[in-house]
Image (cartoon, rainbow, N blue to C red; front, side, top):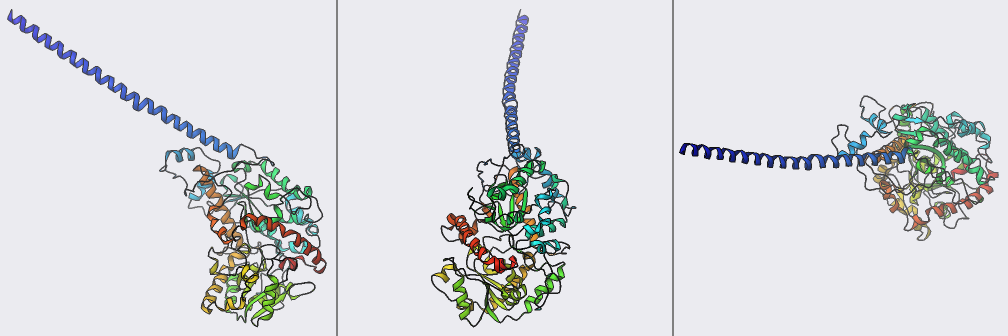
Length: 576
């Protein structure tokens, strides 16, 4: 009996142990299912949701850039830009998941960005695609060159790839080669011809760092500025925009990778109203055109779609040696005049300080004056002008009929230190080509110091130590290569001219924009990196800058009407 009892107790214990093991197994299995559901199923759903959201956001952004057409009359909504985060997503995927997803979505311009990573390709990240425009937008204008100016036959200025006829070295102030009677508004054709020699042109727009539009915008408006209604003045600009918007290259970024050149001041393309009496056309106010970058000889400091490039000078070197020899010649010159001024007064403009400058120069024993008023004058001879600049330490550069003057670049070409009286004459204009620290190469005297305080220019300039003058002059001479346009029919070996500097700046601008888009960052109409220049302008001037520029037009037009009968060569008039 006892034996049987012991066997029953052992069996009960065994059954109890089996039940405990079963209960433990069920409990473990329950927790395993719970943890699996939490960490795998739920997290997987969240990951898929985030991935889908990123995909949808990416598709939406891509659609915004690539598929939504911009009509000529459509006004795009404002875009707000957070601080830029520099850098393109790592090709190995070492950045965040969001960046990786965006890069993998293959924005149409990613291929172009990737070319910069190919170190064996000297053109990587530098390719330019040029639109093959209908001839009505460029070459036809040259064929009808007599119509490009109301009172001047511009045909001679379009010869030699836009450089104009060669200059004779009568006064011995030029070097043996590379000097031409270049019209100051000829940048359209000079730039386009230089582009034909650019070493990194491509027929494949998918690898292009930027897209060039060879539209002669300056020549177009020049032929219609006087005596034509606004429909005629606007026709070619609207035609161009409509043509571009039908091209597949435009849809990649809605034109934000496109750029064009106009050899005139920005105000010729910013007509404020639909009044027939208002000035210029509305090219830069067309919504689609606002996406493009426009290079002009005078820009608006308050708009993001135009950029200042140098006026053409008379010097167009064909090789590096031409530049080096000229620079050395400018270093060795004896300069007997402390300062000089070439220009005409503006009696119809009460704010002009030109009369005061002329009077001070007349009274000074160390100032050379060339008065550029009615009739014949040495002021209209490139040789006489360059001779005066070469013999002067400082050259006065007040405002002309607009904020800028070609004379500023001619004087620097001669190694003469420019003296500016308004920040809009250079400092807020040519940020690609001139140093940000303007004290390195120029002297700034505020207009009010002349207008209200009647300070002595001679006294102010005499206070600059001779050693400092020498340093400043060397800085000016060192800038010469980037301020001149090389002969389009040849190529400089190592130097970068004004064309090269401008093209690289456009490429950098487009590249940064593309990186911002990939990182879901966009620019608005305020150029953050140039915000420093606004502080240079007088307080409150940003509110009236555009209006005051437009007000210049009426006296300018009146002055032209008075003077045009006195000048056979319009380029001479525009110099003053």
